[in-house]
Image (cartoon, rainbow, N blue to C red; front, side):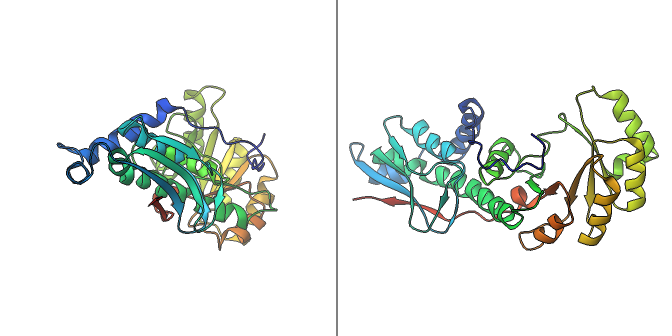
Length: 292
């Protein structure tokens, strides 16, 4: 399946617990500090039980539910959960995402960590979905970048997929992306590409960042797999797509939003690269409500 194919009909695979648990444990340990939840332990009897619901306050797309529920489980395995709207689901204000029941102390102690993860990751999915929706009907596919929060990359990139987007590189080791500083130090575009090709195996793709059509022509002569068309307007992007003529994947980047995306996608590029999806997204407002 090529990068421009929309895969909304494909089921979103859950991340393995092995990947999620260290992140959730670290977040809980940071919150528990040296003495645990002294507020809850002082006020709530150990025998108290409660039933609560994770409820959306604003419309959006759910992501990070597995991590949120794991926070409750790690605090108290006696907490029972019932998922109503999983990752990738679109929810409206007042819609219940999941219900939880069990020891009240555990529910209250895990609440903030669970909501921090769920609200942040659902914010990513919601922002992704907004751009995906804005370019629906074009060939363009929305991808994220490596501009992620330290330690959160796997969860953030999964949230992008929950919103209908796709992932760019997961790290420095899974593809070559030659940028302006690489070229400056190598001495030329050609030298940078030659060195990358000689160093990496035949399965590693090479992408080259270009700012001008002249650089793009040179990239095509070198036979790279993809070109990152940096900060080009729609008109120049259309020229770039025509110049490439299907010989490489074309990726537009540079401050793309749901408002600017349609014109950029209409230029015919394969990918819209959006760093803001993970580095500066607004959290989705989700609350934990007591159910009587």
